[in-house]
Length: 232
Image (cartoon, rainbow, N blue to C red; front, side):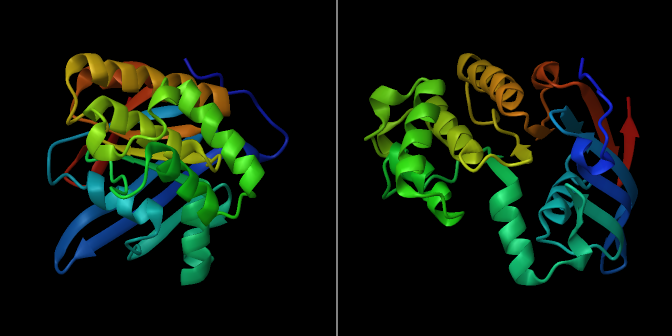
């Protein structure tokens, strides 16, 4: 289980903090006062039926959707206090994303897809080339670096996406059904990489999944139902 070591600074150990988050679409309440904390390095699974509010919560955490009331903070930075430019910068630098459909750029090789994310946050060329090479080796794809996405299997594409999510050393990875389009063997490989790489880099993980097997890499499970959280 996650080691909740006490540190001197409260915000140094909290990657994500959600307080009384509420969001309506028209007259339909979608988030009904969500409270959640994820500590640095902690892995949390978010489960729940379709339409329960999971995607809306992720979009609010990213700053894509503004809250109607409440507060979301990443590493002590409240999203409500940030300009659009500052929100974009925070998303690029502090959050990594892994999606079910990979979202790789088809005209870039595996190496270039990962490197592009490093360029966006201003990592210098020599450093980013070293980082990309290290991460490709770490996910077992050094021999596939020059291949384009359409020449990679689904499992390989997801491993590229995982390396891309980590290249800028984010505080938090948001993984939305990352194994949903993979077979069992590839899905298990991606999950083990998510676990080991989050441990290696001290990155927190919020994993949205319908698969109970996926929750085994997490420290705790949260269930969302009708815009509310049940925390176990």
